[in-house]
Length: 281
Image (cartoon, rainbow, N blue to C red; front, top):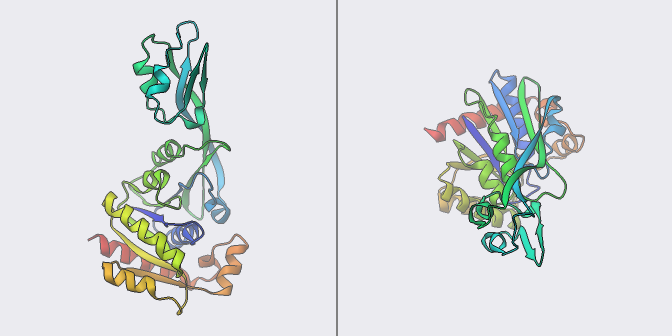
């Protein structure tokens, strides 16, 4: 089963949930794989602390211009929806960070002056810890197109295992790439107006993707119930609440797993997994 952990905004505790759920399930004997697909800012490895065994560069095809064939007609720039090419008199400028590798420029070039070469956008690191098979993607500084790296990372999915995907925050292309194909998505939110606003956006995204989902409220307190009201109105189950507790925050700030330091939480995360399995049926 593939479970993605997502949130409409950053800083809600998505990685905290993904890592502690993975650790708790692994401790209970589940065959576990954890993929950190938040490739722009991966941090699950800080908590899992894997022994990295594999480093794999990831390449992305970008156009290469044959200046001897090019007539600078500008057709390639016209077809590029992302402005990755700019043609001026006697010069073609390429901005590889903007390229989406659609191949349109080479297809429509009347001079067949464009081929494709690999451009390194980041790397995948893989290893293991606590019995968890772990991998994460790391986008190079300056690169802005994350989905190809996420797609490459997801090719490591072993469907014979319970797979937990730590998705990027938000509702844009990287999140969609990370979440699509999941059997279930756990949306992590916080009990604030900002949390509710971004939760609504994430819910609409998952409805479009047709991925079943439920809500986990992190840093829960008894002062803000608008999320409860929203979920009740939309018939969305809230399947776990993690209270706002100083001890949990301290363990997190030290880069440790609170389910390891507070073992009673391992059973709670296993119950969370059982709830997810129940909702899938």
